Structures are given as C-alpha cells and as structure tokens.
Length: 382
Image (cartoon, rainbow, N blue to C red; front, side, top):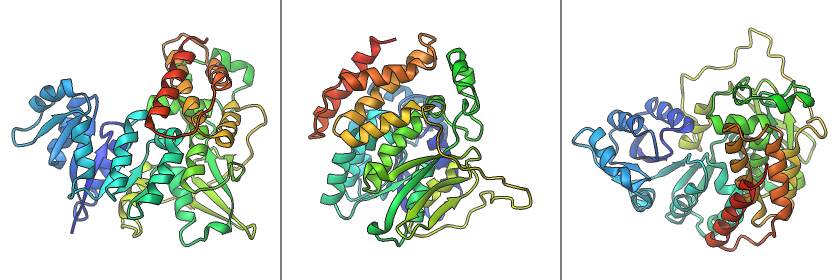
C-alpha cells in the first residue's frame, strides 16, 4: 500500500527536492497535501503534477487566488486549521516539514501527537522547542522524527543499530561557506552576492547566508543535541570543503563511522521517506575514477563566533536557542537590505543573547514571547 505524504513548505528548495524524490517513487508514495505560503503559481503547478487531496496556502486571504490557479477538479484551502487537519488525517503517514521559521512548530507537534512520521527539515522546530519535542516523542511512542538535514540524516544512518551509550562524539561537517578562505579583515566589505556564492550546495538565500556566517551550523548543533539526546560537549564541528562526508559519529572504542554521498538533498529526503528500508534510485553516485581529495579540519579558533553562540545556547537551554535564532533572522534580513555589514550579524546575535533572561521551555507561549522579544531587541541594533 502506498504511503500518504504531506509536504509543508512545498515551494522551497527542500520542497522541490522532495517533489523530485517522490516523482521517482510513485509506486510507494502518493501526495495527500501540498502546503506553502507564497509562490502560489509553483504550488499550483506541483498540484497539477501530483494531484493531492488538498493544496493549501497558509495565508487564508489568498485561498481564492490559489483556487483560481488550480485545475477545476482539485481542492484549495487557506489557513493553519486546514494544515492541522491534513497532518493529522488518517490517510497521512508522513509529514515533511520544510517550513522556514516558527510556523512549523504547531503542525509538527500535531503530527507527532497523531502518531505520524515527521521528516524534519525545519531547523527552527528543534532550536526553538527541542525540549518540548523531546517530551512529545516520549509521550507518543508510535510517532517518529526522522531528520532531513544532510548532516543529521548522516548521523541518524551512522547510529543505526547502535546503543546510545556507545556514542562518544557527533561530528557535523561544514563546508565553511562562501567566506571560508577570505581574510577576516575583508569580511566587512562582503556583499550579499558574495555571501550567496556557496561553493557546493544549491540552497535558498537565507540558508546560504547562514552558511557563510556559520549560523546554519550553529542551529544544526542545537538540533543534533535534541535529535540524538547527547550532551552539548559531544556535538562538534569539522570544516570539510567538499561536502561529501555529511557527518561522522565517534564511538566509545575511538572508531569513526561516516556517511558519504554527493551533495544532493534527495538522498536524505528519500531515506526519511523509505526508512528503515533503502529504495533503489538513480541518484548519482560518487565517482572514484577521479581523486576526491577529502579534507577535514577543526574550525580556526575565533573565526566563527556562531559556533560559540551555539555552545552557550546548548549549555543554558530554555529559550536561549530560540533567541539566538530570532536575532539571526533579524540580522540576516538587515544584511540583505544593506542596513548592516556582514560581521554585524554576529554582533547583533551576541548582544541579543547577552541581554536575554533565559526561561524554561514550558509551553508555546513562553517560546513565542521570547521570540518576539528577541526580534524587537535585535531590530534596534546595528
């Protein structure tokens, strides 16, 4: 029997990769729902291809506009109520969450409570509410949370069949982003176009800038801490410019297990859909007829303030990781609008985190209040 899939964030880069992954496995999956906020023309085109039960914009005011773009026999809706209905529907087996920002929190919680498999690509969910998500998984043993980020998918695969006590360290690999080889004094002159020139991955603009600042890796560190229930000091980062080794696990006997593939998100997405099986695909394999020249090295001390922010956020926990995320989003937006220079991204995050009074992750309201405070505070900084 084919499994039903709902894609949240269907028109983003992850959503488009998911579309390709699903198109390659029509005998195993069918699309129950497609959800996006903007780019309704692309959303409608996807709906025409996959013919889901519902096509949804999270903006209720644009539901009519979406309906006009769809073939007459397909159904459109708007608003988060319909999203909640889709992720908990009996015909839904897998929910891929690729929504950027805090909007993915409640659908993910709803899906877990309904016992669904959540293929998680939205870092913010675990950064903002990792402690809450851990509690939800403990309370709903039939639910599954499978990572879609290439690094976390790699660790998930490396840990298959391993006992938790065997984990010594997790190593997240990082390309180093667009500025890996730049002298530090040159960063103040970096433009948005410079930051978007990622050497190995094809991603959205926000994530690509986060890669340049290493904030993407900072968020992934927090994410890994909750996904794999390890201590902050067990989450480490290695610079790996080729983006072929997606991550590694060091076991308690000092051996290392790594997962390698070409830098293509379809690998991780397909595995999240088919786990615990592996589906035969036509994805390109590594070419060993040419020299791979794989490099691994520790980050240069002092070069990436974002990694220090992540260490602090993991150690203190509570609302601080969410504040770090919110301040970064505000700072990146300022940089993209030309209001600040690139190094100011780190300065804004640091000042916002320093000013925050950390509270426990007791409920959504606490998270929302901290998020709103951080955005307002960061907005006033330069």
